Length: 334
Image 1 (cartoon, rainbow, N blue to C red):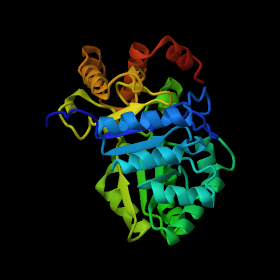
Image 2 (tube, one colour):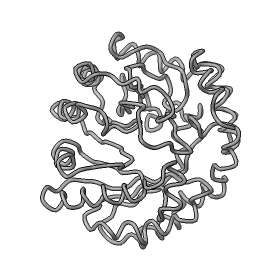
Image 3 (cartoon, one colour):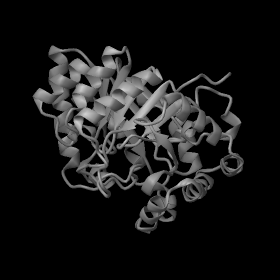
Image 4 (spheres, rainbow, N blue to C red):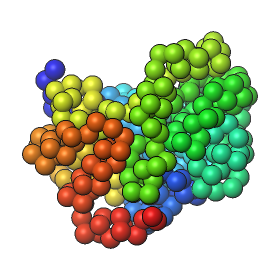
């Protein structure tokens, strides 16, 4: 399938500020400078995104709901006919904010990484985060009764929380009658989850196959009940294996960092320009060139297992990261 002239999906990490410090955080949020733009400049980025012509924009972070003007950004994108989603840790969603989210975004996803406070809080790196997420989901559920919109949970799994997979559908999902979806996938080796010490926490290859298999999906759907969109994934599309380079379904996403810098490949370090200064079409051409770089093809083409992927990520980050990136990587806990 031929490549198109721009991304179908853009993920914009709007800030690296975050009240949490997740053990697997892909962006190392809560551990580094926020690099957050002001409201007016964020609207300039939104205009550039509209120019790029994606069908979907995901606002993430860090914690995007900490960003002043995030709702205005969502409204600008929505006016352009772009499907918008916001991913949040759910630390604090008040009724007024929930109303704004419901009337602005196509969907709201709250990260839930355990069925119990003990497990979720350990993954999220802060005590009380499970209770906060449950309260935020309850507020969204109340708003959805008056203003129907789509909200749900997004769950990342590693060895320390894999045992709670079924329980999330059994005990968390039923708490919120208007919850629309539950998405489940393995944590991938990106950000702090790519450090050597974390390789033993990533799911085994057998666990990834189990999580994304049809039998487990059927079980989760049965536990969640009718009306809940339950989806599982092995997240292999994030690898961007060279064998998939002609499959547009796996090579259709661009990633923007908080200050407007654009990554060549979503989960790997290495930027190719800034959306505020470089034409979106040029940035996309540079991304395509990076995907076909001989080093990239060799490094990612050798990946067969989760362990291989972890090693490959570290090679990619060292090759394409800036000196600042390298200093940050060297400070990651081992």
